[in-house]
Image (cartoon, rainbow, N blue to C red; front, top):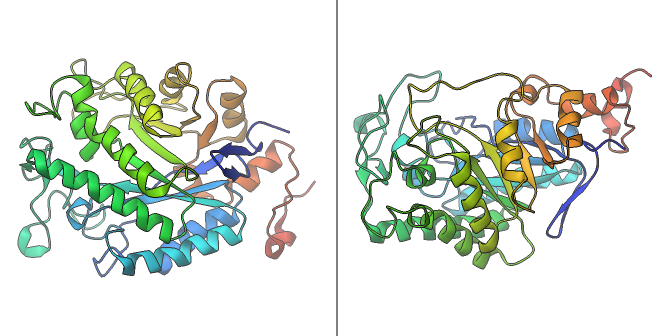
Length: 358
């Protein structure tokens, strides 16, 4: 069998193949209450029907002020848990597994969704005061308030409580969002972290919030549930976060209880040149994978089955995240299996007449 359709086991979780759907925000909680609805069920469920092994649900706020937009999903109350449970039950019924990406947007919170405007949502229109590692604003957004040391510990507890709710909602794993310029990334990067307390300065101190989140979540979810971490492996600026720091912190995260690392890039600052192109982030994932024993996932313009298979066959990366290509084609995994000559036993019975011709 091809590598792409080999099962993978992470802790006690058996995943039917190595095609993972990454977290992709939908900004579709129309009541602005963080409660998922039919859109999320259909969106995520379609990709489970489409053959993916793991569906990672979108960046989901651990507290109301952690939402990127007022229309983002949440996991800070039990009404949200009940709504998510319908989604996870459907995904599981299709033979796929699910993870919830736990997130806090920090200074990149309280903004308009892509099709509704630009910049920060004013307080009088449902926005809120944002918080961060710093009081410096992300370009084009309102300035955040710098978190007090005690408040950082409250955020850590928010992540732990959210993970506990994710278990109740039926998710098989959780992913900590430490990428794309959101709150944990804001602490990790020396560009956005000039703090002088225990959460600033050295790499160990800047990574402390993430390591404490990993430990707190592990204490809440027990030993069986996998914990993933998504990193941006570079800020694309010499004085910023880079792949060497990412690799070191991934090692510390593994020691603290994390199990898989999802390697993306960028998002902290504007005005940098990102060398975009097919598989452009794969070398970053391979760099991390060469230094650790835990599974590593590659992401970023991986659109073709043979391209994905070659990345795995090269022997460093363990998992392929198919994002925008799966937005265009929810059955990407089924199509990839056909193109690679793999006969799957989980083609949906209801879609049997749509199987690719021999």
